[in-house]
Image (cartoon, rainbow, N blue to C red; front, side, top):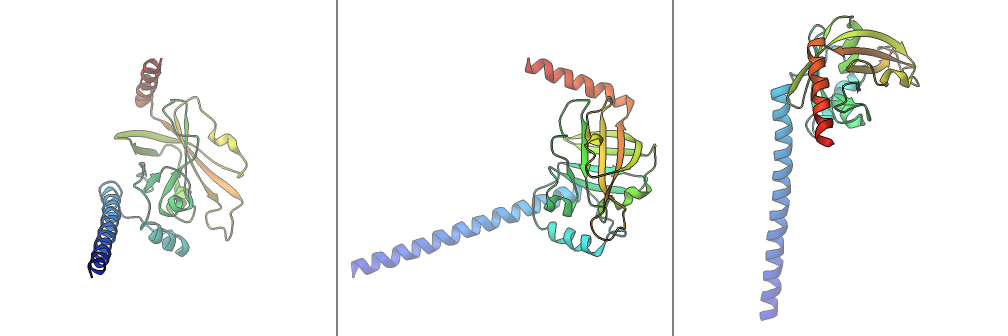
Length: 214
């Protein structure tokens, strides 16, 4: 009789602990999702999907349910374009915004920061980009202002567009032509340079970091 009571008690405690664990996991996931939503609400306006393909609209809606908050927000007010920028170019990140091209991020003022996104989503608006347009990147609590200096079309194998530059730059990459059916054969490149007023600050920050490291 005693053994049966102990067995029932053990099962009851086990079920309670399992339920508590499940509840904590659910609470943690809901908290994470809410934090991501709050970041988007504060930093990024609702996506303008007027130029998007139906496939991209569906993928974006699905991707919004998962993943972490973006690392930055990219804006080109004249288009207007506003897109969250995530830590890499995984399928998930490109379904919900733009992604940092691996090995192009850093504090080096000669770094050419690569940002990629889909041509049938956020970056379809780049078809109307023009030389001289301002570009704004909000990242790490800072607002950096650039202006577009070059627009070109190249092949997917052309890695020269992401080489370090003499001037702090951002290079936006998407597939081309914008309305091509199937896998697009070319790449559309928009390069912007950091405004002169902010270049000296970037260089000074980099030098200060180097001094601290040595």
